[in-house]
Image (cartoon, rainbow, N blue to C red):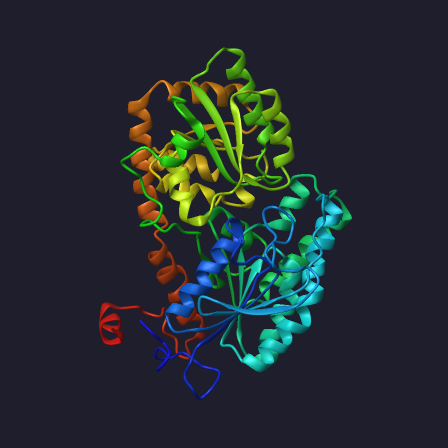
Amino acid sequence: MSYGASPPRGCTVAREDNVLRALLYSMNYAPELTGIGKYTGEMAEWLAARGFDVTVVTTPPYYPAWRVSAPYSARRYRRETLRGVKVIRCPLWVPRRVTGLKRILHLASFAVTSLPVILWSALRFRPSLIFVVEPPLFAAPAALLAARLSGAKAWLHVQDLEIDAAFELGVLKRGALQKVALKFESWLMRKFDRVSAISERMLARVERKGVAAGRTVVFPNWVELDRIRPLPETSELRSQHFGNDPVVVLYSGNMGMKQGFETVVQAAAMLAESSDETIRFVFCGDGVGRETLETAAKALKNITLLPLVPADRLNELLNAADIHVLPQRAGSEDLVFPSKLTNMLASGRPVVAASNPNGQVATLFADADCGIVVPPGDAGGLAEALRSLASDAARRRSLGAAGRKAAERLWDKDAVLATAFEEQIGSLLARDAQPQWQVSEQRRASAG
């Protein structure tokens, strides 16, 4: 379906050429391989492929390594076009070591350098929709101002409840600052025409901050099911890196502050001490927690570290695992839904995850019977769960197959973007009272 010729009935457009324009405002964007940048990039490209005119205001790629990738610069503005999307990159301060204060300054630097760009882009581009991704919440005021000046609708998409996480994980101290920050966040969120979050639990928190339920929607991260899928044969990458190790336990993705890798390292040490040589731990990725893992790998022979693999080899990497491990710190679970879980389950491999009994992941696993849950910080429980699965190939196959079915049911890319995103855009832009932008088979046929 293309909207280049005429917009859907009831939807306003900014100019007489009948092209729907979307202005995306996100700190992270392609070609970043993990996290928010991956999903924002895919979303923008998906819209462009559907006929939208899309412009993105963002930074140079720096995540998860926390250093700007060549040939980009952290000091200069840059324009480029990536797969049909116009991209404007703004200067950014990237600290070498991330602390609470440095992270605030890091986020603020993008808010400052991008402010004139988002305002100028909105006034010149005249979008129908301005879509801003949190974090950083620092960028939200500029997005609102740009929307009001240009007449666009404003949509805030919450990938991470960063204010809650900063205080609950101890990055910032509780007290007067917390009260002020939460009040400001609540006031700001209520000003947006639409607010979305990537899980039901996160959206419930958003609504408790005062955002009316009629303005909210769950907009989950997704998985490309034709690209991430179980492979019938042994992964070439596994043969190359792991040889004949009987059981590989894999973590792949950002190595950040919320993961709690020390628990996995402790479990690896317990299994090494018990002379269990059948289990190898493989960590693939980058981030502020990689240094801790590098130190552990020097002391433990059953830990291997790899760099991030290119996107076209991700499925091969995921299929190199017998078991995926998903560590999380206590207190962080309902503040962000781990996006890497979608690919883990889509690969058809079982997952052992840290989760509170009533947490998001525990609830999902109970419903889908696709993995094992251990309490956050419980290294002994994690070691025992991994040992149990390592010795039970039939159960690994059963859990993996159930995980694949859950991924197909919940996170198919086209279904998520058509239902949770495209229909909501139509609803948001509609002039009449029609509750949804109906993407019917009849419209698909007429557009084709």
